[in-house]
Length: 278
Image 1 (cartoon, helix red, strand yellow):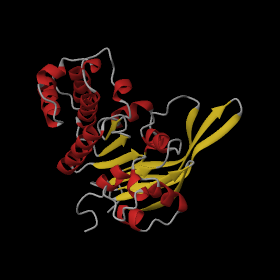
Image 2 (cartoon, one colour):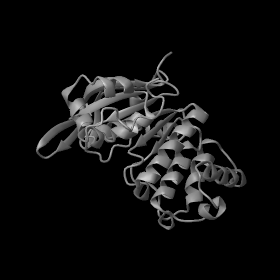
Image 3 (cartoon, one colour):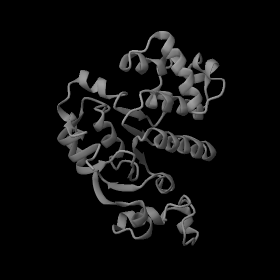
Image 4 (tube, helix red, strand yellow):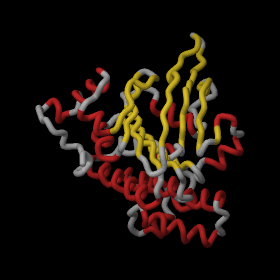
């Protein structure tokens, strides 16, 4: 089966007064339909830049994709125009950003922001979009959906804002969902709820997921395969089972040793979801 997303020799450069740096240097990986791939590494390893390169939302003009190919269903997106990428974002690729408070527009209601991709990509009428917004909010577990749709981002808790972000990302039932540290700013209980929600939606819609995270506990629970990044390069790629049971690279072993369960002398990581080793 051919890969839904294929990244080949991706290079990202940053232009500065002191010269050019390469925070992402020649990385390659692929994701198949229905698969969850964990992109793992410490802060500054290039994970988020890699994810944002896929959808061409790099933070500034000084940060540019300098080489490589990014293929979606065999079509290279590197040469896509801004208009073509706007058609891809939301429709083919949905994104859950790391911090919903900065990703959501404070000037518009939650309902308006969820309805926007529905009207733009699917051509829904105002009434049809309004109805679908309520359905999406209920789908992501938000109570009083009609009331919440009229609320602004600052009226909601962090967990509810993240659920609203997921509703936006999943509104057009994309083929690929990029989740960039989707649980980092949340408490432990809400983290578990958000992760379960993403996995439930993936199972329901058959969506491929690129899960960008530094949390190996999240990887153990959610992913089938793992790509480990360090200083802009890939140091190890393997199944989640092999990563936890027999990591081959010293950096991967160091990440595992930094987990609390390992330091406490626990042989079997409690983070592994039941059945993942079956």
